[in-house]
Image (cartoon, rainbow, N blue to C red; front, side):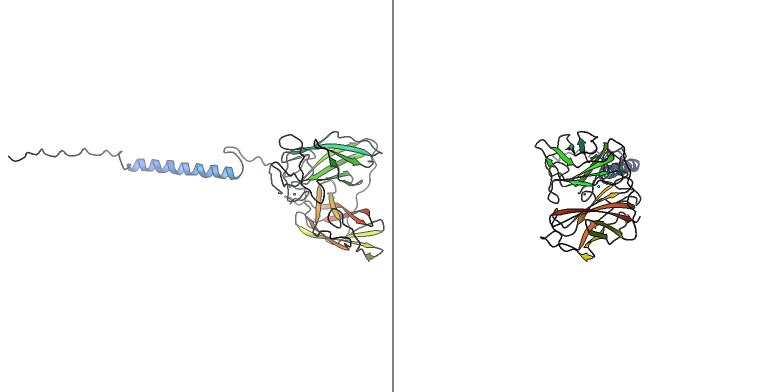
Length: 338
């Protein structure tokens, strides 16, 4: 008997929403995909700027020396760092830049003094601690020019310059033995590079104001002339170059005695001279680093320095050099173009 077969039932029609989307649905999906892509791009952009989504950057920059705020405060506040301690490019030629040494705190590191007042007319000890981002004392410092910390003191009129190398106690406290201070407003600076923690390898310069009670006399700051020259202990020091604010340049200093070139400079802090600068008016700080390393006695007469002065105007330079075991300090006023 032949087999009987049932007629094949047709498959039900596939609705438009199943499988391949209808045109309207495809448009909606494309819109959502584009929106998600834009949101992802925005999140990446905000992350690159270091700001959380939905919050604008607060303007407090942090850079490394990694020895460098738009306008530094007299004390306190976070300020960005710079390539070498005390050097930083200027954002505006007429104003000190980030890292000009005018803040007591930078990148979480703070100069914490025991007192902001010192007596006049007699040697005094300035005690302080460098604290880190965790609030505890910093005890690991990299050696820079043979020292773990360079300490400076200068009065507001840029007189009374002192450059010291205090020793640190086991608990992280420092004591700087200052020579007698004249009455007036002073500022002290600590230049250092942490050797551990989040700021490892970043050169910092922190400072704090100090009051020395009494009647303060005034000394007019030096006036820059066409040739920056100063005399000390029978030596004549001449700065041969005129730098521009914010621009890295080589600054050449020549030392002479009785008109003859000096060639018996002795090593001092791994070089034949140490050069520090302070901006007239606001005491912004800059450390000009030597470009040559001392190789025994016999340095001079011309010494090259890497200079990057962040602001235009007059700068008071203090050149320290050594001969026959005696350290000499010459103060030279230098005009820096904007």
